[in-house]
Picture: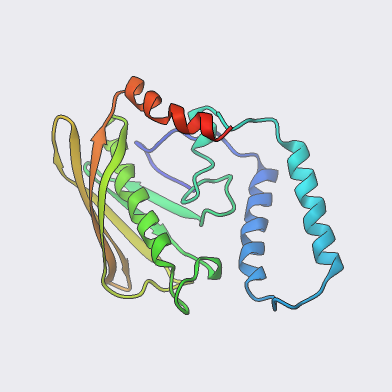
Length: 209
């Protein structure tokens, strides 16, 4: 992931971990094309050994600093093989992102899964919080699917702040391919101060340990 200010601060990723994540992303794409009945002891052994190596390298628990946690996002995390490479540009009250989804994100044939489309819009619209300088959570998100969102295609995501109120702000946005909107969304995001935000996620942190 790359971004220009005022996006979130993100921990730097070493060159070897960048290579590892990129290789795992390519692996997730490649395994889509392997027949379910394909039998390979070599592939299974290599995958199991890789899991052991990565587990042994792990020194961090679930609770991580914001700098590290921002690299783990399933939508744009530079240390998350699930996350497709994504770039961002920030305006005064808007964000533009560019992204491609490979076969591993497929729903209908040759189309990005609708749940991934919704998650992408939630992430992009919610990211506008960095333009306000305040914490927030999603209050509601209304998705309209207009046409299929294609795989292996350069997608453009736009999000803009429409209204800012004392306790919430309203954002709209859309995904476009080749100039046509594939899905759009309107979201309401609720401002939370740090104390309330930490209290909100405390139960989830306890349950996830």
